[in-house]
Length: 249
Image (tube, rainbow, N blue to C red):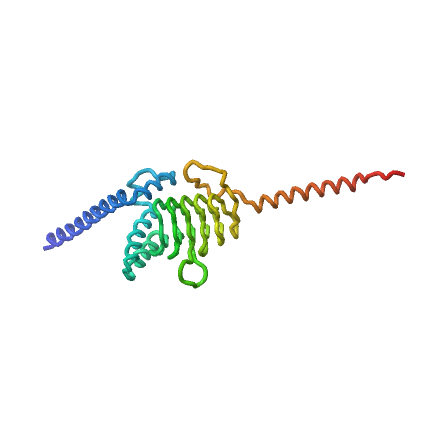
């Protein structure tokens, strides 16, 4: 009897393992076929990506995007509760919170992902890159469009906050820990709190530039220029006091 029970228990365990393996294979095939832009983005924008299997099975940003697509479809079909329940599970497992009502284009890459929040009415274009701690949040209690619209190929650095119904133009970069509360033109760089815009329209990068820390700061540059002028004036006054001009007798 004991041997029979042990055999049945081992059979159940083997069946569960086989079922899990089948589900992983099916999941991998679906991701490879349906999410090619997202998988390609992982290799293009993360030097740590080494194999397709590693990306599909271990990248939390990719997994969150896959489940978001499912939840978003259910949300569009007006299925109650289930889309939010799916994304609640995603938040618990990955630390990434995406409202199923958000609109996200192909090629999204979420690096690490912990602390990323994407609100209900947020709109993201294609090939957007988000680093950890990014918030695309709303302001106030009004209904309707209250979250940001992000253009194509935008990079948003770690810890940055983009708040309200504003637009970040395509090919722009938001620096780490910046707080953006106003519209951003295309081909721009934003740094600081609140975010200050520096145009970089004449700069061209091969692919998507992911350096979101070494960015120009126009305010700091102006302060440095003013400080240089003050130092020059002080030196001039010092020389004037030391060697006053001789008056003609």
